[in-house]
Amino acid sequence: MPDAPDRAPHTTSTVESGSFCTARCACGWRGPARRARSQARTDAERHLADAAAGPRPDTGSGRPLE
Image (cartoon, rainbow, N blue to C red; front, side, top):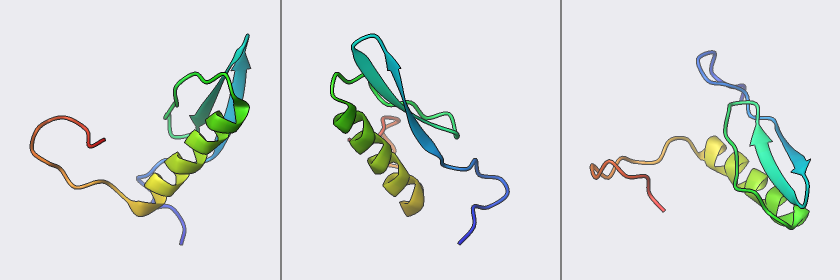
């Protein structure tokens, strides 16, 4: 199923900066800096899974769900 025209594409990559590695996505999402490349890749995989699942329901608290 192709992305809707109003949604940014989700293409992830990892970027290294010194001892840290960060997952990034073409949609603008950025994961936390990690020392382990494997954990940054896992962050990217989770982001792709979340993006494929669609938006999370709003809890009304104004805070993101954990």
